[in-house]
Length: 315
Image (cartoon, rainbow, N blue to C red; front, side):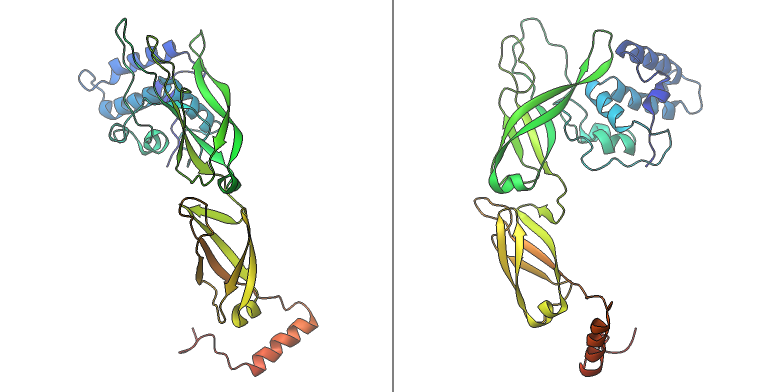
């Protein structure tokens, strides 16, 4: 996928005000709108202009795009990093997946998940509860085992008096429930957009994702772990202590276990009303033959063990 420079598409500077972005869009729309344009590629150019304006005219999308696209050039190979949008506070308005599908893959990859109805003008005297806001937050896997109160910092796009977009910081103390899982939403009542006409504020919805863990990977409520074994532990069977955030677990390795086999330990995944399981992918690790004694032991095994690793013929 190639990076799209929306500022270049509209012909405006990166610090252009909202009015400058709007003026540039209107000028290009008059030039490329298929109903009036005589340009051979008018329809395609108009689609590019519409896509660029959809991002740069929206405070939230523009702020996220500016952070993500810093340092990229037009046409450069681009893939958004995992959880690139974590910590951004978005309102409920935006494009539905169906509307986003009318734009490029670049747009859909970044903003296609931002659903909801666009905001419209409200009549005088209108009263309505404020919009819900949402944000993705990254937590440590350990928090799911114990629960915690964490200080969460969010980046909130704002427009200043000159029409320029900037990011304001917002810090909240959030209670993380024990047993929280990836994809779960924590609702903070009254922390969304203010209400209209004295109505209550909306809520802030925090979607939980976990930071990468050096050993464990969460799959729903299950936890997956690659477990290295010495050859004798796999061949003879053994009891291995596996360290987890909730404490060590004793795991029995059956005699004759092979590398690539998976063991399931019930009830030792993420806690909850029904706890998940621990999934162990066994990986047999050979000791190096880096000393005379180690080489002697390997040579003895080669002579005395009736073992054919490639039964049925050599590969």
